[in-house]
Image: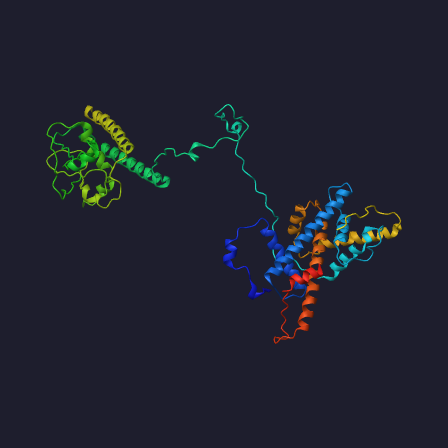
Length: 371
Length: 113
């Protein structure tokens, strides 16, 4: 069914500008219903305005019916309407009259009106409504502002009773300082944490293995151990014993490592190095068990990028403990995307672990020397 | 509209007739449950609620809907007759075109209502 084309008063622009009225939905639905009835009667097209008016009239009729029926019910002392109330209301609204209208006192049920309606139902075909409608209007639950009592607050002034709704929070009307939170990615954090733990555990395990293998060597602390602290490294970690140079390859049965590509640059300490500093190269070495298997090509991933590059020179005549590696970290750091700044907790954790390992190795070496 | 209509049910009718009428009405109301009026129940309930009509019974809602539908159908059929009469009187080139434009709604409806 098409609307009267030429006279369409409702184009899209107008509907968009018009604010929604209260009864838009109801009126739209009634328009559809009325249009369906008219189509059934025989009409083939409509003017928009005609349809609107007709729907309006139908709605007005409906409402007046309800009003009249309610009136009759109230008149009889009831609040809920009856079929008889409706029939009386229909009789009132009937324009063309019905048989038996002049008869005042007869049974309502046999009134002409009722009969007419029954006839209509039988005659007229059933035309169900075109759309499925929900119950409307939909009542939304209003979220009330909780009272002072409910919130557990005391009203700010004496004149405000506590059963009144609470005052809004200050951040809603005033700009309060905010924490500048770091963006947290819990999944990535967890992955990183697990990875670091795994690394630490692996290094611990390897260290223990090596200490058990090369036990007797532990007592001899070579004074020729050198501490390599790369100039670049110090600026980042500032004296971290982990960043000391690893042990030199020796001929005590340890695998010989290829000399590094770059000559070692750094301070050389001839005096006795502390035990911690001595063993940290071993720890460093332990952290990279894969490199033991490699032939020391040099391209091993060792420590996170925050560690400075450690370079050293191997002296084959010295006794060494542990395994030296080509720790040309600088070249390796290029490929890394790890942030340069080391987390404090990470360093402390590693320090603790290293100390623990050293203590253990000290005890074991002491035992060995006593043997 | 004159609302002063006598209310009471007179006992003068024979009991049999009364029962017949009552039966007819109850039967009719029962049949309403199967018949779906064109005007949806939700719409009728909405507008009846607005005017103070309190009724939980679906059959009465349907009755009102049917009554409104009857009214609308009557008006529409009258309008159609008027329209056809007008078309018959005015000879047009388009001839037997089936278009029945109820553009005379103002005059139509006022004459009908």
